[in-house]
Every structure is written in structure tokens, then in C-alpha cells.
Figure 1 (cartoon, rainbow, N blue to C red):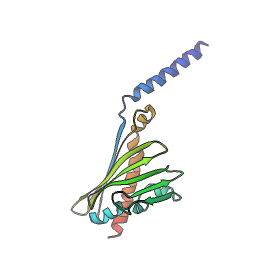
Figure 2: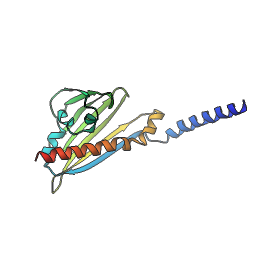
Figure 3: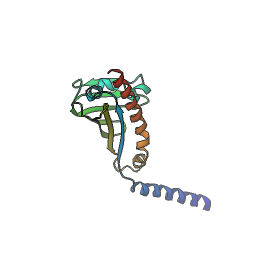
Length: 177
């Protein structure tokens, strides 16, 4: 009986420690990746500014070819929106919130099943040989202690998808020039 009581106290202590420890972890996360593409900014921008183009270069669509996608709003630019239902990638929606030709596409990303959202952008910088694309995503997981631990690995969860997406974008943009 004493052993059981000790184990129970240790378990409670570990749970309390994990909860208190989570308060030391920031609730915000930032993920950023970039890649230089040997294509003009106008060409790259056309692949970013239209939601229907994203299915050709993002990894999420490649991992789930059966993903159900619906498009609403304008075909490109501010207000363009796409939503998806996916067994493997989760359900979500993305709305373009800012569009500056050959410079920037910003979006809001929402995952209703998780009650989470984030803001991202793809910024284009002209270089001597083409266009550098900088993809960022920023979010806040709030005060949920378990979600705060997710912040610690968010870069390693999302970053590789950004890297592969940018590589696919590069291939698509360079093959069209």
C-alpha cells in the first residue's frame, strides 16, 4: 500500500511539474524557410497568388491526392480562399489577406478541428539571378499547457513541409521560364 501511495504521489508530482513547466514555454511560434528561384518574381508570384496553383507545389496535396478542395472568393489575390477536407492532413482553410504583385502574398490559416489559426506570408525579393522566396508562419497556441509543448517542435513539424514546398515551387517556376 505504501508503494502504491508513493507511486501516486510521484505521478501527481510529475503532472504538476509538467503543467508548471509549460508556463515557461512561450505560446507563440515562428517558422521560416527561404529558397532562391531562378525565375522572375512575376512568374513566382503567379504561382503563389492563386489558391488553385498551390495544389501543384505544396506537399500537403501530394501526401493526400484524395483531398477534397473547394475554392471561394476571387480566383487570386485578397479574399481568395480555399478549404480542404483530408483524412491525413486534417481539415483547414486558407484565406489570402494581402497581395502585392511580385512582392508578397499573406494569408490566414485556420484548422477548425483544433481550434487553431496562424498567419503566414510568402515574401518575394528580387536577386541578381531570380527571386528569393521567404515563407513564414506565425501562430499562438494560447494557454493550453499541452499545446505549449507543441511550440517546442513546431519548427521541425512545419519546416520540412515548407522546404519541400519551396523546392516544388522552384521546379515549377523554373520549368515555366
